[in-house]
Amino acid sequence: MKDLKLTPLLPEHKALGAGMAPFGGWLMPIQYSGILAESGWCRKSATLFDTCHMGEFHFRGDLVASGFERLFSCRVDSIPVGRGRYGFLLNDAGGIMDDLVIFRLSPEELMIVVNAGTAEKDFQTIRAGLKGDAVFTDVTSETGKLDIQGPLSRDVLESVCEISIARTPYFGFEKISIFGAEAIVSRTGYTGELGYEFYVENDALHELWRRFLADGRVKPAGLGARDVLRLEMGYCLYGSDLDESVTPLEAGLGQFVDFEKDFVGREALVRQKREGLSRTRVAFLADSRRTPRRDYGIYHGDGLVGHVTSGVFSPTFSCGIGMGYVQPGAASPGTSLVIRHENVTINAVVTEMPLYKAGSLRK
Amino acid sequence: MDVLYTKEHEWIRIEGSAGVVGITGYAVGQLGDITFVELPSVGKVVKQFDVLCSIESVKAASDIYAPLGGTVVAVNQSLDSRPEIINESAEEKGWLVKIEISDPSGTGRLMERQEYDEYVKGLE
Image (tube, rainbow over all chains, first blue to last red; front, top):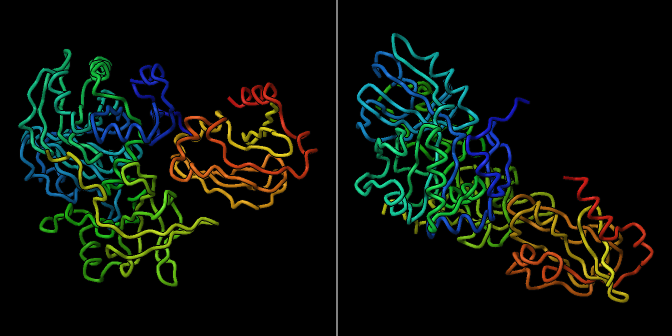
């Protein structure tokens, strides 16, 4: 096993007594006060997440001539400057190599934000697909990333950073100067709450972390709470709910695939569309506090219809929640499922996503 | 009051011929927030180190073993709706079950507090 990468904020986490664990090749904070309390605080106030493990790439060049456009499922050249777009890097079979966000920094300049565990392979794949004089660089190691999420995150951000960000739309971003460093602040997140993600030079990272936590409205939250919050929204976690064996159509994420353009994996997806899906992603609510966990079998009627890919105890609903892939006949909202593993039996009901609809995401 | 400990991080407080069973603060620290407790039925008979019940936390689903053999005579019903009591008070209010001890000689296979503390130190 390779050595774990360390977040620059490691000393801060140690000082706060965080529980640390490996995630995507990095040693990251999983929890501080407790996963349930931290997710609850994010739903009502604001929480700060260290997400330095995420990968960031820079691209500069002609989108079409370089071949960049063809590497992604979503349309890149129509992203307005100042905005971001969610999409996929696919393999030839239409399988998801990664889910990512592309930000348009200028007409010829992009920032691509990818998952930690896939960053290296993504970088190789994209670089191998580019031609001509496009400049493509991995800036992960010099880019710190912090997420501030929660209904009060905008108020906190405006007071800590002394800027006005109210006009930045969902999936928009601003370039700012903060504590002597350049930063990008995007109105994005992974919690279902109003929130912002900071991409900042490592020099200013500690100062920003401390200033946020000095605000009484903010508490630190770890990747454990992040997992609860994203599951309550039905957001996928790459490596759990998405991987190279799954297509965006099976994952129910076809809206992030633009069939009007050419892209790697398009043929396979067109064929899958024509032939129909053999499985599809669903979210479900359990009828008890039991947690449906990864790889538990999902049954409907007489047979096994699929498997759980992620699950948690949801503090918002006070019951187990999860997602998984099932045969299409068992995928409609309202369908009763039985989830089994060894001597555990959990009754659950397929429920429309997002499970949690009261978030401040678009406020 | 006599409290004894297992290597699996259960405790048993001996009260006459009965024993009250729970999990230790160390175990709770490892598990994180407790989210569900599957309590046994009153009347369940267990041998020493048999599975007594199971606990789910934000991290894992875990079996809890009987520190001593006996018959379950009471369960902590308040854990059904508030399993977080175990996080708040693992070695008192967060007790799991009370058993009528059938074989007190099993205490020889359990640890006193000091021995348990040293055992835990060795795990860290």
